[in-house]
Length: 171
Image (cartoon, rainbow, N blue to C red; front, top):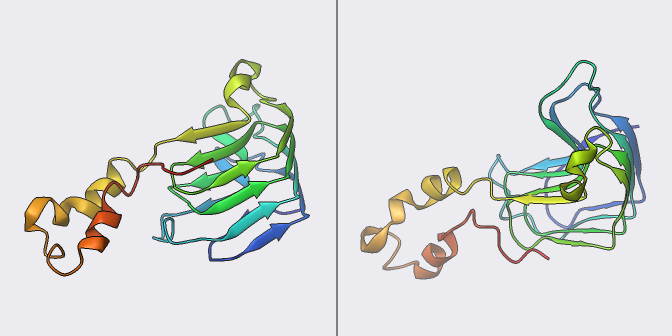
């Protein structure tokens, strides 16, 4: 069985069974994709559907920090559809680390929060605002106010770059 790291456009990950992974990890996922390489906001049309994720959890006898998710969308990954998956016997379900235009629907969660029952209300789906400071500063520092060199010729590009890290249009 496997764990995956993916990126691209119009990718379909369907009808897989991912189990018994990430026992020796503190920040990982059974299915993991990350936007740090710059593709977070440009990947579109990807789908994760009809998969079964089971036994995705760290071994608490040796690791006590960090979190392991069955499905982990790190650092603003955007434009995905996550649907009709089953997540069972796992530490946490789905993490949406910021991002835009991701749809999460019709997934089943069974026995999630296996390592910490007190976190059960937050365990199925967790959305955070990562990137709010770092991405905002990296992308928009050169284009603040009227001094932006793009304002005169590329106003639409400047508008698109405003608040790039704000999580928007996720359902």
